[in-house]
Image 1 (cartoon, helix red, strand yellow):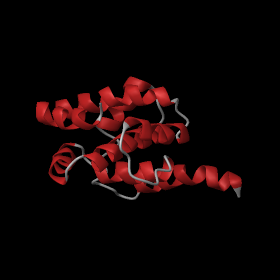
Image 2 (cartoon, helix red, strand yellow):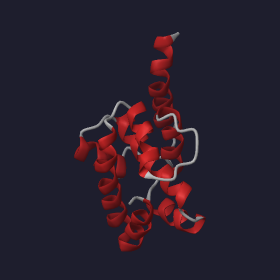
Image 3 (cartoon, helix red, strand yellow):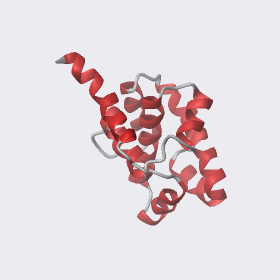
Length: 140
């Protein structure tokens, strides 16, 4: 039973990716960039991005988060995967709140500091300086 629980997150992510989640698009863009830059697994990239975006969602006003959602394809999927594999259970108020999710994903808490600029860089490329300012306002 314990072995099954350890494979469950990977299985669920695989199902999401293979089940025609065309809006997910996490195989491209942001996830690919994070994997390449940071040398993390698919699960770690998805969960880490999702954890940081969860912080952004919890701290931003709806209109600002909606702007991010327009430039980050599959943002809801990132959030859902982070809850599943990062075991996020409550609201986040700071980058400190993201660290346990990274630990649950098998990453050092210091990796949060590597993910933030990677996500900000993607937001800048996809949405310009406005998107970067929105993210930086909550990812300090």
